[in-house]
Image (cartoon, rainbow, N blue to C red; front, side, top):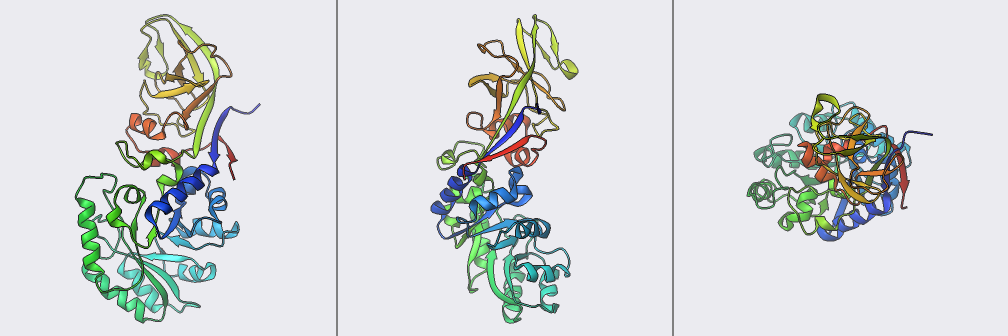
Length: 358
């Protein structure tokens, strides 16, 4: 019998979330499936969305080549562009779209001998100050590429730093900066990530780039009406593999971080931080045991964690524990651990992945 730890990936939920993103934003939408589809399986997610999505977005060329070799024929955008000029040959060969976010990349394209012109997504740094051309140099780079004969299409793009804060003025300022820097330039634009799709209608343009919302996790710290319509794609469950009956005053786990305050029935669960469940999740983090609510108690260890079975009728060895999914939002676990859903979902490994729904 294999270790009873499972990541169930409901691909019909993925399709639902993509449709929600596209319908709300309008226009076209690239499904962002970088980092192995945020830990969900890039190939499986791409196959599920292949008839729905207008294209896909990944971080780097290795991810994109993997998808092409798996039979994905839709457009694939390299969000970080190319890391050396030699990659331009592969971009041509596999017909990828590429972001361009630095002057050296512009110069590399202008100097390249290309078999076919490129589809470029020219990125502006409108205020995040991570990557992107400065607004004052943007129009010059745009026109150089447009007139070079090396580029077939240019999509103007930027990325928001604080769109997950719906009342913060930084996003409005970034939109203004982007509009000023692209004034008079033709073609499509793309500036919406997941939180902007959900909360910033002023940012809607021709192309959206939904990411975390595809996987049913909210990017917001507070409840948000549209985000409440998302369906969690991953349900992480594990089994109870041991039970302990302890009196009051007994320590549990490494560091004795939890001391029983009453007679306590403790369940040991086949999941730990080596599987991706966050080590810093605190006592009290909610779980569901055989459909009944309970809590994490004590420190998460590498291969196991402990839960409170005291008031769970009938629970014992073999009982199923939902760590997140339909009843426990992954955002709740992330908040308990002082992190974000993005990180937790990307960290899932060693669980048995089971795909359903499409």
